[in-house]
Image (tube, rainbow, N blue to C red):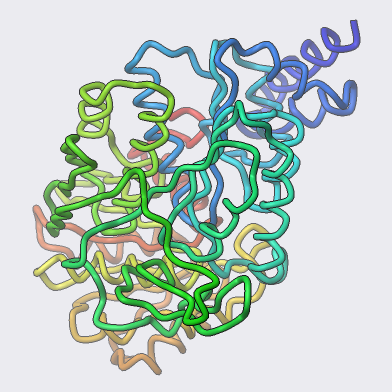
Length: 449
């Protein structure tokens, strides 16, 4: 009776939230249901015939989870999925309360993964990466990695843990687990950087503390590495991306074994997301043709490589919320041979991380000579403009705006007809920007996607 009451009250609160215009009801139902019955998530997850898959990591979890969703739905699975991206236990519980299906699929915040594993007892856990992000909230990466490993150690042999072989800290988590462990990674030396980026994080052996030796670096600290003392080596991936071909505005192509994949998502960082999604679905028994078709048809998740058409001009939204992620956006922008027209928006709300000093670790200097238009907005626009000034941008060409509508109109006005403008916001700036675009009729609200 308590479980039934929790579900009913949770659903009712979601309806009320939407009717009163207080939001999409993506977290409130879970909060209400959990207050009524603390075990509601465990009970409802236990009723899913195919169990749960959870996806976590600093970067890429929304895109990866949505890719897995597209593939599983194409295969006929009926999903319970926190599609709007509410990835704390309240949002996950909301999905369980409001939806029904045979399989659970949940994007999970990095700090929430231990609780999600304990409550959901997932059959598959996908660990993407761990990068420096919101130090005022998460603390040191090694601490977070240790919490992940302790949580995953509670899973039995009926579960599978899928780890990024190219991330030294994430890969090391696989040691000593009772669950089955498999790895994914890149085997594409043609995409390696010339050297280590200064924003790289996990460059020391998590076992002995020695500086790792990198044979190749793909981005951040992801690459081919080994400990000079022999305490750690990059595991051999069961799922390896080979023959990666990137283009500025066309499809990205690569192979995973005999499976050829083509995606409209740009950039090497999205290759990792597609690879992780394909590896997860192959692990779940989905056939290659279904995976290939769903990946080819997939469009970017809201704010992540999303394309919006506005008056004959394309606006591509590229979320960037930490140094490594922003550097990969920079790398992706440089694939476009045309002069760049950018709207950059920096916020410092709790969900972004209140310390914005991380922008000094972004390689903005690479963009300075390529930009024809640069408009800067967000709650910390002045800080970002100062960083760009020291990054060799002409301060006379930097325009500061006070709202996103003004920023978008300004950058579109300078973009040639038929061309592409780019908006690069941090997380809450992206939500604000999409709300502005929704008001213009260009997109739907994110909880409606």
